[in-house]
Image (tube, rainbow, N blue to C red; front, side, top):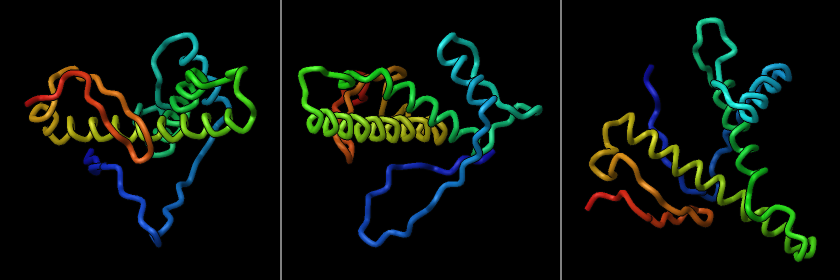
Length: 141
């Protein structure tokens, strides 16, 4: 299967919207939530085992939910509601930046470009939207 190369595109004024269709199946969602909570493989719902666009978006949503519900800024009792809302929004922006950065690493692996820039294991901190990447370890000279 040929995978299109993904890089986080710049947000351009006047850009054309690209709506994404979704196909949500509650039973499949319950299975995925159980696997996320209790362990086990995330499996395709199709008999041939292939993943389609809808399934990949569902798993992305599942993982975003899991990451966002375990964030460090959630339910800070010392913050007022306005500050909590701003922190939650910033946290979601940074999660999106992080997922886009990880997506670019997957693309680099697929395109045989990862090894020229990164060690087999790398660590980084992603902040902001658009993303600012601070490499902790694993960047090749």
